[in-house]
Image (cartoon, one colour):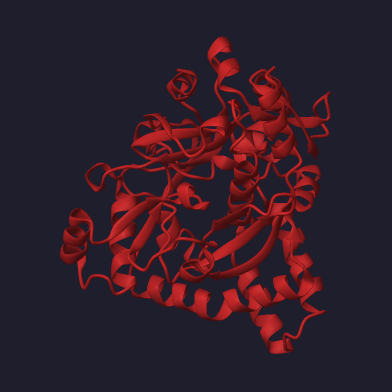
Length: 405
């Protein structure tokens, strides 16, 4: 193994992301501009974008007052008056469309060793994916986003700043021991997070009514910590970037058209291939995998951090939902270890003999062994955009081949 990859691996597995704030993207994200709208995945032209991206960017343009209607928004996008950017290039990333615009709230994570920042828009409460995740925009979504950015984000920000933040690596490590794999299942971790916020909020200047309002909102946000995990993965992976000569993977993201990776030694350069489709199980007999949309979203960064498919054996309940057994999960962890530099020192998986999840994906091993990361995810319909099942997709081998070229 290269010494440079060892250095990058130690930075990655030694990363300690801390959730430290929540504020408007235009105020807390370096380099953000009023006319900038971010999307998930590598660069993609507006013409090649899938529905959630196209709808979401147009919706964000109208919400920000950049355009009055869809026609005007499309014209401004095509002329370059409205700028489009990859979320990962701005240290951000979230599930699905990853739409982020200036007035939207974003979670702020700081990696404690390097100070590297990571961001992700919080899940939109009872609206679910809403604008950020599914690209849906209407009056209800607009008012909900205003409420999050104007009311709930400032309350959460006060709790985090006055309490010193929340250690996300430790939180997720505990969730793994309680049956979550921290990508598509986070039932226990959500409860742990809520109890931490409750405990920390009691030591702040929040009034009782403010505390109750914040906790009620968080409790309504199923899988709130998924978005926290996306921001934490970005901060952790970016902290391992920039090591000369290192090939360790520092980003894995999809836009529904292409999938891209980055490596430590090549910084912010993308290596792309056609976006992969899903294997798995549909919820309803009326749906099939032929209806599945290609991978769209930056939550796959969680896999590169060492969770999700890397820790498959941690979640027997999720394995069963995918019609698999605990033994299948153990085998999956063993397969993923074949393409990784080593194992996490934090993310323990009780069922596997080695005790800890593999981490530090190396393109050379992926190409030599013809094995690519098995990424967990929800199966989305290419027709409706809604979730129709659960399963996995494989990172395209071509991404790793290009990274080695």
